Length: 106
Image (cartoon, rainbow, N blue to C red; front, side, top):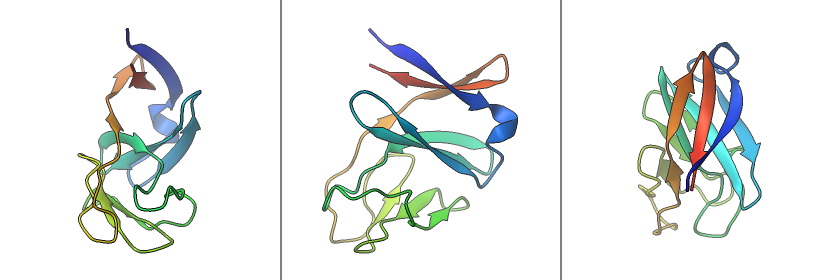
């Protein structure tokens, strides 16, 4: 059964902003790609490093680059678009209810 986690009011995550959320299982990055809210596991599948700690986030392309080895991940699918990573990471539904961003986890 899916659960919803309150992240923050929409006003606290404007276009081009990101936020890291710790869950019981793993950390998730929440991204505002010019109005589109996306969530992806905050982990490079190449070496399990954290993406949001220094990784360039491109809100126009909806991508984030791993700060360690340069793999770029598509935030919509979790798939890497460049090597050395070749495995996707998990993405999660994001919704807004009553002005609050919510992360859906199963």
